[in-house]
Length: 368
Image 1 (cartoon, helix red, strand yellow):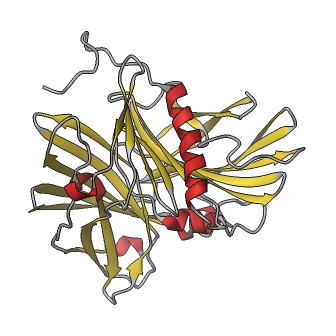
Image 2 (cartoon, rainbow, N blue to C red):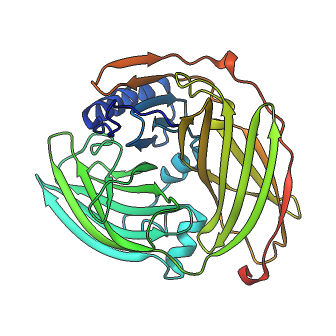
């Protein structure tokens, strides 16, 4: 029987204020720890099931996870820092999948704009593929804005309700003192509908609140290939169920389990990533992905969808190698139903390298 967080079995209210406070504090810590000139990225993780706020920071990325564990590719931050112009956010993002999807007309052009206190936000483009819902937006202000004025980006709703478990990220590029572009993502879950109305809410540092409602429809030219790969390594059970191919990229679905305790989500299974190469040894760029974790009957159960660049027409076979992307530092905060915070120290000694077996997947001809 799964652990319940309220004695009556109901789900606790999501600690929005605590999460936003942690985001602000984490951003400040990340800025103090790095001298990099590239734009930083903040990832937010939310879970209605388990009010666990897990914070991890590194030189190139800052992560906030609620009831999940994930690695964020530094590629996301570094490419956003090179965005050249405002407009066509996807085409100029530096991400091959977003660029290709936009150029092939697979994205939904929104163009909805709202202005408050001299700050205008435009929702430019939306892409809903096999791994993420991605939103491109532009922020234009009459006066100079501080970095990440809208925090960790927009909150999402699906048909008016919060996703039960959601993970995603937000990164932005300062184009000028008063103009910036941003890309926000929401990881796709199995129970999401193929089309719906998505609510987006942005809250500024001075109390501004902008709300958008945009139609979202999943792209149809996606090919799902069953994989059914299973393996065990150092107490980790790894299951890869399928891999999906589309013009916007590759999506790989995984589940992983490992024995542990409910007080410690810091287990190797939460840090699984994949390296993919084609038949010529060329590596396919990874953009990682979020994940969800829950504790049940003495085991941690994790699920995630990892995203990669789209492949070229000449790719016939993929070699997939699982590995652990272990963090070098971090920590966390657990928030109980009464809002009481408990610090979770980071203990690298409890983690170890794990060697997984590689496996291959034939690329279907229909993708070419």
